[in-house]
Image 1: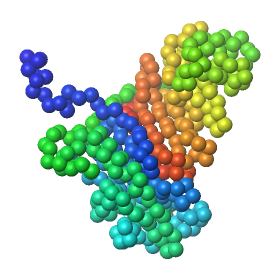
Image 2: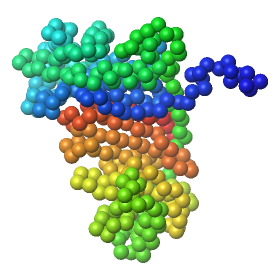
Image 3: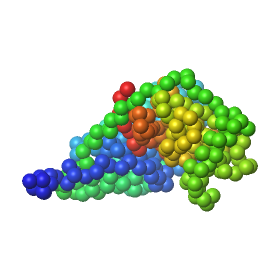
Image 4: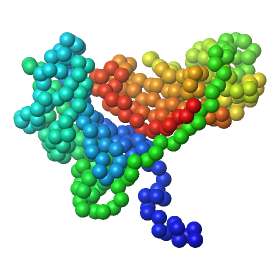
Length: 355
């Protein structure tokens, strides 16, 4: 009976949940998440040009529409320009006006469905796209757009179907349907109960030894080896260690794995409350940076700059479920193109957290 059921189930019913990813194609980024939604972001070609970006969002499903958004920064950082841009602008494609964009006074706006369709069609081939406002003009690169659209179609199962962006066809194959977010039931942890172990004290020394022993990797293993735990010249990064109770039996130990010019990468381990045994080690350099542990939400996060000026970021989070930290979020802001904080938040993985 079970074999018969498996035989008649459609392939999409048996498929594993989609694995989100991020990829760059020249001046275009693509990020698709585990719900099946894809986001494509294009930018100006040259960093010396004023920053501009257009984002296309498409959920999974054969009838899902594409939503277009736009963001730009003023020339010479003159924010006074933004108010006039909101009232006086036009989108130009190959020398022809596509009409006004609906900007707010922060330089962010929406594309109409007609503007979105026109750009998607034009970006299949070489095209010149710009936004004009008075004497100012922003230029959007077309380089990499077609490849990003093709990758979107591939991920969402649209290749050779009527709903494809770039390779349309008449195939009746099943397109990826929207996928539900996994559910995590968060468990609260004690608040304001943390402790700090200071360098050159017996407890600090003992815990540092436990952490070193748990990070048993060769120095050549750049993804896992933690210099701040092993190398004398880097140990000052761990002058203090933070301890957070998780329950009556376990604690979270927070240390630094590696330090850099503008951020650090964390090392987190779950230990018994007596601090005599490491029970679990979380992936090194995944959490921390400009993130850390939030006792209020029982969430461990990582937030990392792509470069010093902070115009591109990556991040992730995990939630305590009473036994371990469960992945709840991963995202990127895409390419480093001059937008402070990144132009867009582009999810790669999302879960629904219940508290």
